[in-house]
Each structure stands twice: as C-alpha cells, then as structure tokens.
Image (cartoon, rainbow, N blue to C red; front, side, top):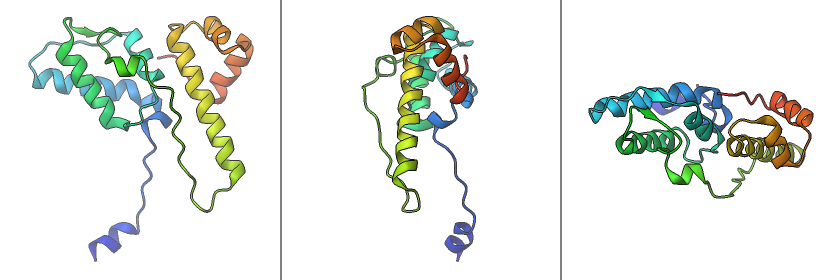
Length: 161
C-alpha cells in the first residue's frame, strides 16, 4: 500500500551536470561537513578549484562530488581548497560521453539534439577550464569565434563561477 501511495507522486531530480549552478553551494556544504568531521579548519574553495569542479561532467553525481571534496579536505595542507587539491581524475577526466537512451516516448531527433547539446556543453566547460576562464582562449581551443562561444554560453546557461 505504501509503495502505491508513494509511486503516485514522482519527483524528478536532475543530475548534477544539469544543474551546475548548485555545485558551488553543494561543494561548500560538503567541504564544511568533512572539515568538521576531520577537525580541519577549512575556509572554502578558491575560484580555480570551482572552475575545475564545474568543468567535470560528474557521472557519479552528488555522491562523487562529496567523496572528491572529502579527499581534497583530507589532503589539503592549507585552509582553502585550490585546484591542486582537487583529485587527479577530476582535473583530467576521461574523454567519455555517456549516452542515456530515451524513454520510448522520445524520438530519434530529440535524442540526437540532447546528445549534441550535452557534448557541446561539456567541450565548452573543458575549454574554459583549460583556459582558466579566458573566453577568447577557450574559443580558440574550440576553433570557433569568441562571439559564437558567447552565444553558446548564453544558450546553455553556462556562467562563470
């Protein structure tokens, strides 16, 4: 009976990669939590660390973020997490694109559009991380004009941390 009552209400929580605007607040929360658990005085994350975290696709979702920040908090020698404290697999992720097959209701066109959009957004985030937020340099890395990059940043709602 409980299962049927609960299944009447469906809540879709988007993946972390679909709501990157939440990442800085989540990161600060997890960092504070683990710093307190391990009795380490940590102030927070610097801008370079946040840029690196935003550039990562987070296939393991929020749990992967929490584990990465716990490791960074444990290994950090300072009070602020920098990009040097971020785990290596997040700094240099594998070039994998995860394909999630659509529900039967979604068609081929919608699936292809979503895949292209996801791949473009990931490439843009990676270029911005590699260029340390320099949009002109990121556009050069991507082989597009700065104006085209700005258009894509707006289209995909990608903002600076």
